Amino acid sequence: MGRSRREFLQLASGAAALLVAPPGATAQSYPTKAVRLIVGVAAGGSPDMIGRLIGQWLSQRLAQPFVIENRPGAGGNIGTEIVVKAPADGHVLLLVSLSHAINATLYDKLNFNFIRDIAPVGGISRGMNVMVVHPSFPAKTLPEFIVYAKAHPNMISMASAGIGSGPHLTGVLLQMKAGIEMVHVPYRGAAPALTGLLGGQVQVYFTNPASALAYINEGRLRPLAVTGARRSDVLPGIPAAAEFLPGFEASTWLGIGVPKNTPADITETLNKEINSALSHPPIAAQLAASGNDVFGGSPADFGKLIADETEKWGKVVRAAKLRVE
Image 1 (cartoon, helix red, strand yellow):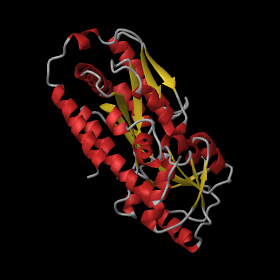
Image 2 (spheres, rainbow, N blue to C red):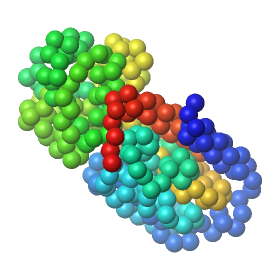
Image 3 (cartoon, rainbow, N blue to C red):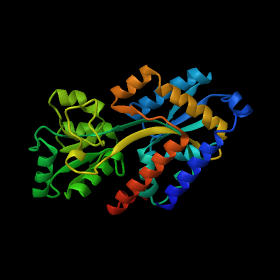
Image 4 (cartoon, rainbow, N blue to C red):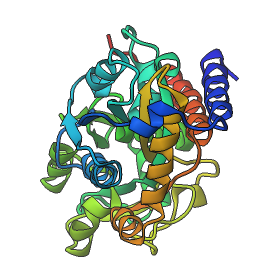
């Protein structure tokens, strides 16, 4: 286990231990003003939608506005730095995602250490992507795709939402597991990447199942596999890549983080309300409709996920020799 993972597990376990103390005046008066929830991607995508869903619930339950503040750029690092530098009083939160686990190794120079500077509050959702190809592509299954790719090395163009994004690293992992080589075509976001695939400028992309469902039903995209450990409820007829490539798994996930040293009773209040939201059937249904499972639990549970994912994707980034200045 790497040092960063040990650090995060220790911090998360310590935070969980502190939560057994009875809440004090800090929790009773929290929040005292509007709370900013920093989302490191542009408005309109699945992370933004889920952030707004949870923000609305917290606003209603804690009687103060929880304002979504989109701060895209640098793979989410701009938004992270805002939270790292914020007062540790629970009034500035971070929507934590897979990108944060990837960025810890991908970026050569960061003004923060995510493991050290952001404390986990709780998970919200966990999902997967679907591997889709343009209908003109000759392969109709993942095994056929792999055979074709091996016969045509560096002839398949793979779109992504940007260098180091989840779809990019999922494609890198596929290449490593299957022993194939593709040409990476990074776009400036998920929407342009999907548009490029629909227009035939690229041949394959990994995207959210809910985003692709209408195009799949219309025959404008062909699904080959989903990237989770099991099949997706949104696309139950599509196999998981792990059915052909044992050990392949690439999840998407979201949760909430706060600046380090945020009082444990504030973390407990937020964690309790997040878990309450996830047990509310309409919210669980909206998450399911977007291709996500509920992923609640304690701060330590979420901290372990972040630590495990940071270690896993760090190995992929290093193996592929990916670095961003």
